[in-house]
Structure formats: structure tokens, C-alpha cells
Length: 63
Image (cartoon, rainbow, N blue to C red):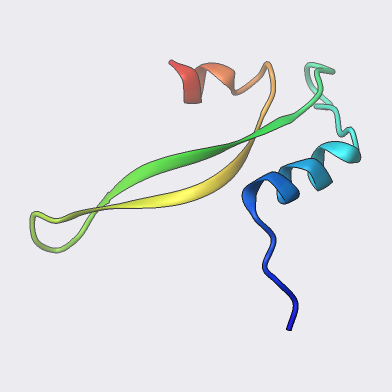
């Protein structure tokens, strides 16, 4: 069986393509973003997502 890709391998593969944002013409870099999700009770879980960051949406994730 094939070994699943790690975070570094996924990012390296995505950044090889060298995609640029059509709006701001900056190169898109990828990060892991953790969002908190509340359950039915008072429990909180964290959802992990790989997000493309450029000049347009940088303030949404970095504040």
C-alpha cells in the first residue's frame, strides 16, 4: 500500500505549480488553518484545512 502524503509533501507539490492569484498577481502560498467548531454540547473540536494565502485574503487569516 502507498504511504499517505504528509503536510510537507502536499505543500511542495502545490507550490511546484507556481499558481498566482488572478486578482492581485501574487504567488499563492499554502498554510494549515485550524477552525474551532462547537458541538451540540459545550465541547469544541478543531477542523484542519489547507488554505491558499495571497494578498487578497491574508488579513482574514493573519488578522
